[in-house]
Image 1 (tube, rainbow, N blue to C red):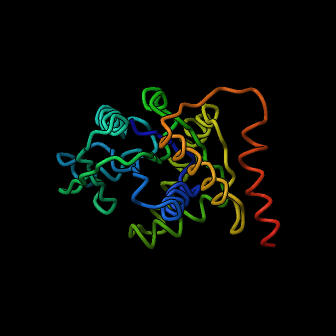
Image 2 (cartoon, one colour):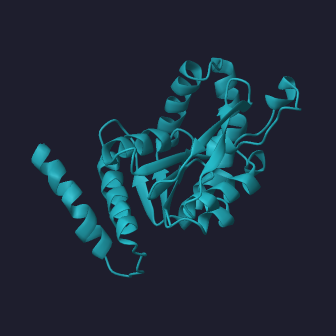
Length: 235
């Protein structure tokens, strides 16, 4: 059975970047990475002018039934045909991605910790934190360069839906996280910390072990101390 790591956090907090980098370091042959963005509802029958007005930062925008079913299948070592979302047309593309689960399955997205059914499947829940200013600047640059959005559209969407939904829905989901990682600024230990944590989860998956609840600081002291020590040595 695969181990599921859920990675939540606000838009442009660095979830996709960090998980991609961690997977590259650990090995793509060992980790399956899924983005929740691909599970936006099919809007093929919805006119473009209406798609533009949809609140994509609300849970109602997602196909939870399909998402939970496919994550459940991955957890049970079953392959899936995952939808692929196209941000340029605000809809799923006509392509699907066939995915065979590895020992570790990483599911990242703003709603990763919001839905209880999805949370219950997670073996580890992580929340990536970043200040509103940092998240806005990252999103401003990304949406213009990668998704072809106008500056006016980016600002309007952020003010009308992204920021309010973060405060109302996404930020409170941090309460369900086993680990909260700060990802502000250019230089921080987010990547090192997550690599260490993911590597430990992979080792547990290979050994067929489960988490053992503890009220001590054993995890922080024994598992993460080496990350800070290595950072001091490099400096």
